[in-house]
Length: 176
Image (cartoon, rainbow, N blue to C red; front, side, top):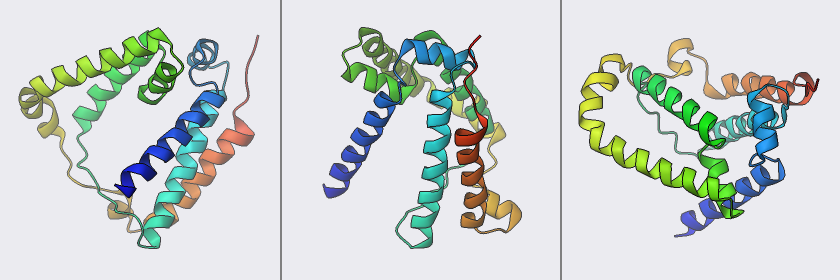
């Protein structure tokens, strides 16, 4: 129960950061998709950079449970296309639609309903998709550590530094 409460509180904090960063603002989302407003991209780079480093530091201290999932390249490709189409149509990704719904935005509520409908349809189609899309391009549980022999923390440090440098020093808003 304590783990659920901690997860809920972290989720609330992340949602507050998304809200304060403007990730549910139509103007910001459109600016991001047009590559004019870099705020959301900077927010994502910062979250991924800090999260990556944090997870590997926790793993180094024995406090994380790293569960590597199989690399289903076909599934990731199809999922990425579906995710991208959904984001372009609705203007929300899964995290921002929950924050938008908490703000009372009806389009975000319909996005959640659409996402749940998609999850239900995927669950029905999964047995067919598994043999057609997932298994043919299943590369198993591979990691960069497996491929390079370099410990995860030594990969996470430069990766996180690169993302944070990108967020704070490289990406600039482009208004015309």
